[in-house]
Length: 460
Image (cartoon, rainbow, N blue to C red; front, side, top):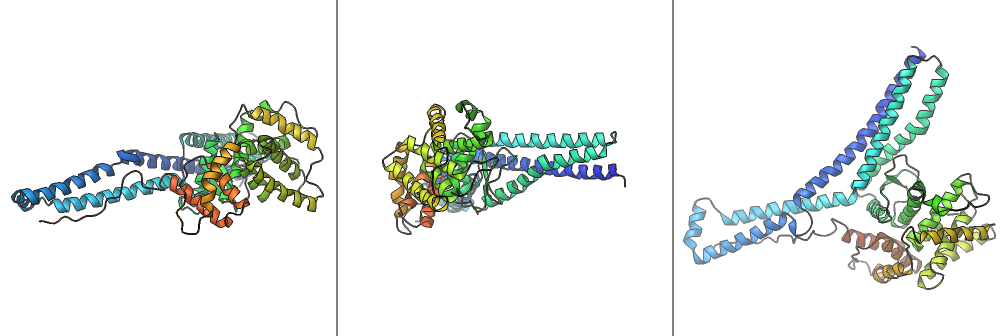
């Protein structure tokens, strides 16, 4: 077998693999469209549900049956003798309505588990386009394979294509399919659905999927990977960092906001610091809790792509202090800061970065301009969230869960505040917060139509 033939076989198999990724993405989009079509047909929400007319017809027939047997028993007997059994018709209507109601709830749960918005579907189509472009590049190499003799150069080109474009795509493919499966079966306890809604409310279009390891970047633009074991409510605020890092930076927000660079830091490090400030501004104390308490390490130094963790913690606390330096809002922030300062003092001797003054100027500049770019999660929002939700997290086991239909960021801050103030055990707080989300999300409660209570009618 010639070396050209060997490379051609590998390229053909690679092309089929990329096409398989495209088919999986297409199937996911079609699945969502099928659910939406069925929902539109059934008119799931409110008084327009098809169960409503069935319910009214059942009540009307029940009333008719009672009136006939009471006022005109001969007509009632005549109808029954001719095979018109109103009682059996009522039972059939109950059975059909019950089945449709079950279908409605199943469809709503399916939508809640993986809700692909129109924007997400557009992004999925963009991924299909990316797959097609990779296939064209593979076919270009195959074509040149038949005419060129510089085999070492072609091999290097194929290796680069596989490493830089195909391997990341295949990793996303596995996470995409696995993540959808986990969400469909609710192994993530709807953390993915909560994250979807959170990033939507931040103005982004992403689909959160449970992934294999700590948060990894995705070549599929629509994906936001929740790396295991970060499949909990406590980790959801970190999605604000991903939005700040990708969407805000890619859209050029960072370049518009940063008039100058930080001395001694490269562009990649600046982007991380910008994303931290952006996330703290939009997600409030909950972001400080999720990042500082669960992820950052005082002794972890800078790398080529990331600043030192003491720098990241500093800009987060600095931003939140600018938003509100005192009051109840600041109490939660100060609890987190005290924990961090204690750990930093023990491990490194200080919580302050070497260029704290420059970082403060950086935060001041970004904060000033963010006020005209995005919505802030500040003291008024925090007070509303905490006053409304935090008391419910301390209820005894078995108490009715709160119902909350407001912004996800409020729920996240109320839950973290309850943990910091030791209102209840963290696991209990998380479960009660998730229950509040489920009860307010689509599919969490009956969709505006009362279940039909069975009532058997008999002859008088």
